[in-house]
Each structure stands twice: as structure tokens, then as C-alpha cells.
Length: 101
Image (cartoon, rainbow, N blue to C red; front, side, top):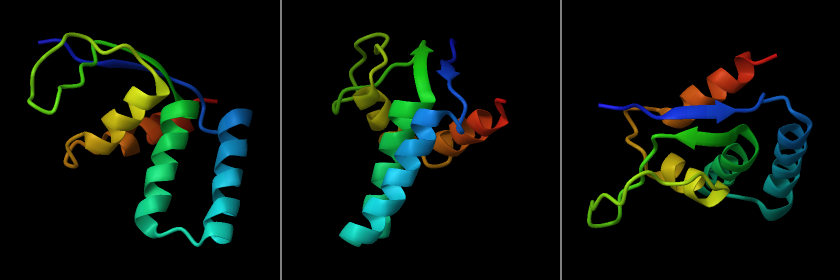
């Protein structure tokens, strides 16, 4: 069995820092719910922290396999939003990104 391999950027990269700052402002201006804030945070992580991946496969709604899924910010967002909550994938990715100096 193969495991996915993620290429991630530092959490404190200029692009991620700017996106998180913008998200904080949007939260206040648009009075975002906690759910919407979590969704938008996942979008930031998908776009600015995850850089690429290998051996990652997103299943179709009918759980059909179509082989390896190419990285894109949209597919990364889908992965983060629909991954097994017990895996805590997003937290793991953020933890690793914060450890990069």
C-alpha cells in the first residue's frame, strides 16, 4: 500500500501570512460563522501551504477510483474538507508547515 506524500511550504511564508491576515479582516467585516471561517481557513491551507503531492487519490462520490489526483488548490480543499476527521489531516499539515523554518 502506498501513502500520500505532501510538499508543503512554511506556514509563515509571506503569501500564507497575507492570506491569513486577509481572512481575519474578512471574518470581522462579514461576521463569518465558525463553519464558514473554518472553510475559508482550509482554502488558505490548500492554496498557500500545500504545494504539491504524490500518491493522493480523491474518490468520486460513488467511491470509484480514478487513480492519482493531480494537485490543485481546489482538489486540496476537497481533500481537507472531506478527509476522515479521525485522521486530522489538516492539523497534521499545519503542524508540519509550522515546523519548517
